[in-house]
Image (cartoon, rainbow, N blue to C red):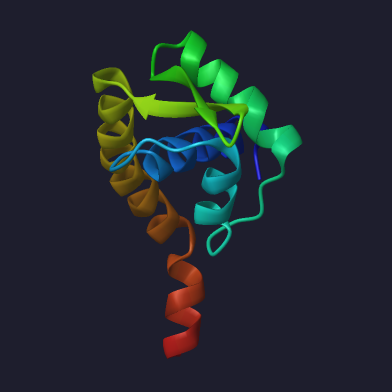
Length: 108
């Protein structure tokens, strides 16, 4: 898969993981696990990039005597998800065009 496309998919997946409820790194990884494997070494740079892009905010909270960073999606982050949904429809049209011969051959 194209690295830029994969990067965009990961960004939207992480934003979607915190869309309905603030969350922290380990929980985000657990929430994504049924859909994709993502490691801490992949997740935390994504979270930093999303924060720098103002797609999420971070709040430090003390949990069991340790600092835990909670991530909260911003309005800009929600707009990113909606934009992705619209773009995905266009991608599916292109996919259907590219694979049309496969479908036609299956019918043949």
